[in-house]
Each structure stands twice: as structure tokens, then as C-alpha cells.
Image 1: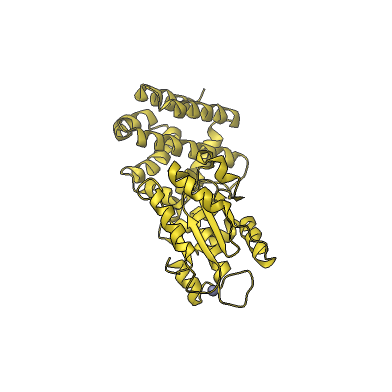
Image 2: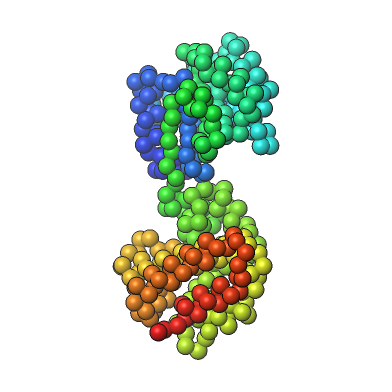
Length: 329
Ligand SMILES: [Zn+2]
């Protein structure tokens, strides 16, 4: 599952690591960098399994042998994991790592250290780590992971082999969310709001998330229904959005997703739809106004969305937006 996702989303990275293992060309330290949720840490664990797996495969780990399982559970004595304590990696953690790695290992094979979120390292800790990186040892492999390469000391970057991760595709995120029990339409929306599974779960837990994702198609339904007014609907039911900036932003992001869906519908592109269960509604909306008008509306939405962080009269901004969406001329 998680491994399938790693291979599907980071196929190029996995290939590169497999090749370096196969050819015996390992670096003494790697820097796995990329966006939040791109699975840098999971891949570091997978790489450690590649290096210590007891099966006959020379590149792919079996994931079932004693070594693979212990690495997965973070209990293999040759794999040392350093994670930030609260928000920083302290000097003592690096000192402990060095002490551990100066001992002879109990078990055969490589010794691997993984430092998660290396960008959180304190300067004094970084200086200790640099000394460690400058004295490479044949039997030791280091894997540093980060989601914020810009915050790293250049001296650390220059002593590692950089491996860049691409963000997870929406399809991978959606499938993973469905695997852990999210309904399809929620997983679809979440996967377009973030490429990180944990961030998606955070968004889903926001009080008001479910109301918002349902409220958006309700508004569009009111837009095309001549007996209803989207503005009135917003006045009657949208108050909860106005007084909370998180909800306001989420609301606008969902509006934009829905509106982009209408544009996809115009293009006959059904593979990129987010609100995929509202095809009839999109069909009606695509007949109500020409595509160029819908594009103008999208620009209006993006403008409102970009101004939410500043002080704006949200009620007025939403009124204007809904007025434009509803107006046929
Ligand atoms: Zn194995």
C-alpha cells in the first residue's frame, strides 16, 4: 500500500536508488528533498530495507524478512532514526548518533542513519553533523529528509547527494484516502486541496468541512434554478463561513475547484473532474453561459481568494461574486 504509493508516485527516485544498490555505487549521505507529503521519510525507510534485506533480490526489498520488518517498525539496531524533538533537532541528538555509530555493530551489514526534517536542526547540532559528514565511512549511509530545502545550510547540501521528490499526484492521494476509509467524493476533493495525506486528514477534520463541500454544489444549483437565488441561499446558510478565515479560504478553494470542473466539462475532459458526481449540474451550467464568461468568473474568484488574507468585507465580496455568477447578461 504505502510502498505501492512510493513506487507509483516516486518511480524515478525508487529506480535511482535501486540502480545505485545494484551497481554498488552508494553515496555516504543522501538528501531526500521535496514538497510536504512527497514521502521522503517513507522512502528513506524503504531504502534502508533495500540495503539490509535478507532475501536474494539484490535491489528490491522483500518487506517480509526479519530485517525488513524490524526496519519498518523502527527496531533494527543498524538503522538509527533522528526526528525533531518538538520543533528542533538538538545537538545532543547528533552527539548520541555519533556515539552510537562509533560502536561496532552487533548485526552485520550497513549502518544507516535517517534524520527526518533536517531543516529543523539547530546550528550547533548542524556543526556536529558536518564533522560527521566530512568523515565518510564505507559502511555507513546517511539519509537526510526535508520538505524545506531553502532552510538548509549550504554546507550540508554540498556534502550530500540530492534526491528530489515530486509531489504526489491527486490520484495517488485520492486512492490512499479511500484506502483509509474516506468516501470517494471527499477523497477526490481533498486530493485536490493538498498532496499530503496527513494534511488532507487535517482538512477533513476541520469543523465545517463537510458543510462547505456540500454547500458549494447547492449554491451552483441555486444559480441555475430560476426559482432560487444563490445570494439568498448564502445569506440564509453561509454565515458560518464569514466569520472564520480558515473556512472562508476552504470555501473559496472548493468554489474554484467546482468552477474549474465546469471548464473541464466544456472541454469534454471528464478525467480531471473533482466534483465528479455532479455531471448533470455541470452540463446545465455549461449551457447557461459561454465558456469565456465562465473563465471571467474564475478570474473573479481567484481575485477574491487572493484578498482573503487582507482585510476585506467578505459579505460584500461574496455578494458581488454570486451576483456575477447568477447574472445571465
Ligand atoms: Zn527483506
